Length: 164
Image (cartoon, rainbow, N blue to C red; front, side):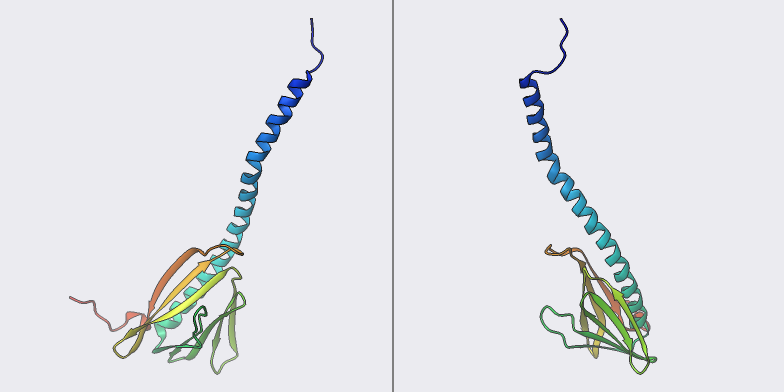
């Protein structure tokens, strides 16, 4: 005797199992797609932050003084780096970090809409000796991820000796 089809019970059982698989796999697929989107945003923001930090390190290495203006809780304020070549100002607003050189028409802007940059001055006996730069990347509504902190010393530690 040969069978030409499936019974109703077999079809119902198959549909039920398929539904259970979809319920389990659906959220995993959704989180993988969402994670991929965050990864792309994070890579773009990390590249922009790397360029900002590289330029800031160069400016602080050549600097003679550091000033933090307009700082408030929850706001990075404006970092001013003064050196022999003039004053350089760094600001973060609206997903952008801007570097401008005083007295010259020279402005550089890095776009990093999902990144946050904060700077804090580290005091020394005769004024700030370093700037601590904290960065993090966040997706909309998420907690900060990929947080980092770096310290750049005024004058690149030139003329300083390690303690014995």
